[in-house]
Image: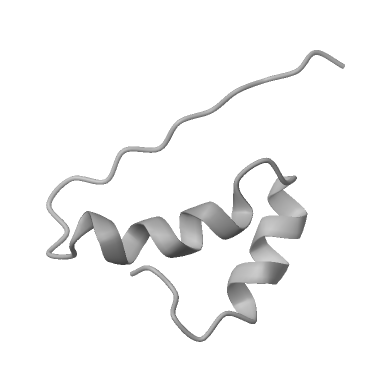
Length: 47
């Protein structure tokens, strides 16, 4: 399987980039399944 890179852009959210960077750094470089498990157990989750 080829290595695929994806980017997500959030517009119209009233949240500072600093707040949303913390969860993003936790899941960067992981599979989608692993990222969902991590975010489900993270108390400070992005909206």
